[in-house]
Image 1 (cartoon, rainbow, N blue to C red):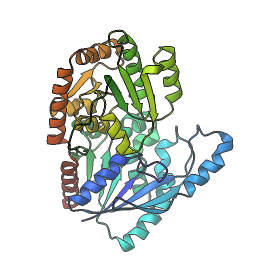
Image 2 (image 1 turned 180 degrees about the vertical axis):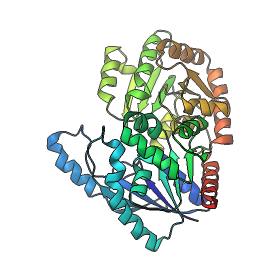
Image 3 (image 1 turned 135 degrees about the vertical axis):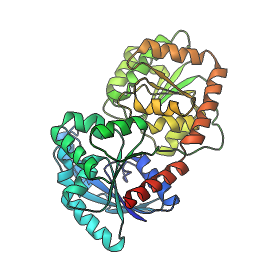
Image 4 (image 1 turned 90 degrees about the vertical axis):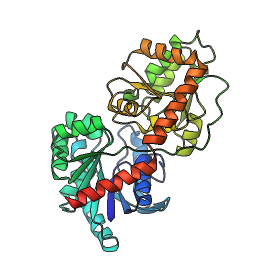
Length: 390
């Protein structure tokens, strides 16, 4: 089968980490037998936070991105489009991208006559496909944004999500909790396909000092501030404890200020955004992965850390951590925004290196059994076959 993948979040020349999970799923599907090309919605409008005098240069950089790249054997077309700034307009971005996407897919069809379109997220990707008037069999993957951001905040966005779910032959959810939420928005046929991770052959050396690590965009919902405050609670009990933060984003300055105000700057490293392999290497050299985030649909970062024999800590009530914990041990969960409980749980683990090692072994076993890229690729291709048979 030939599949055209349409995605908003996908690696760029200047941002090789963005949407890396979508790229790895594409690779996994190819390895499982699908033929696949990727079309990326490349928005050429700089973020609103870009200083006014820097916007022309930033826009030019975005517009000059190559129109075609080959990454790890996957051929990718980048489709330029413009839209209003992020905010109340986000639910309409599919309509802004529709015409250029329609032209790009028509061109692609001549050299790669695809049987199926796989859109990552209803908005803007699937909405752009439908607004462009394409009638090919459609599969929509849901990763959380449609449910937690677009549908609840924007009436136009909710309508676009519901239309995409109604017209898709199949909706792919990254967990059972997400599948249930998709059904509430009209998805009649839904399959769960877990994303995966690589499995390192051996453990990385553990750090000289016990070290917590978070790999995530520096956004409020990821709750890095809770980990910093938990570190402050534990500061005297574990004077050697360190915290490595991998990632960048709008909350960085506030988090740096918080670390300073708590007197923790010497214990916290803000590593910034790293290449994906480097981020994995550094994270897996730590002791405990901790990300007590909210609105966490799945969280590939958890299983990437667990694959490296790290126990992980997430939040109660979130579909991602709950889903991972259903399949085996190695994931512990705490109430969201509860710094004292977070510190208590971390303290229990830090008191016993043997417990950390045992949980790490269980974490690795859980990922080996349930969250490999091989399993993801097979499940993705099975979902495509189901969609085409309907």
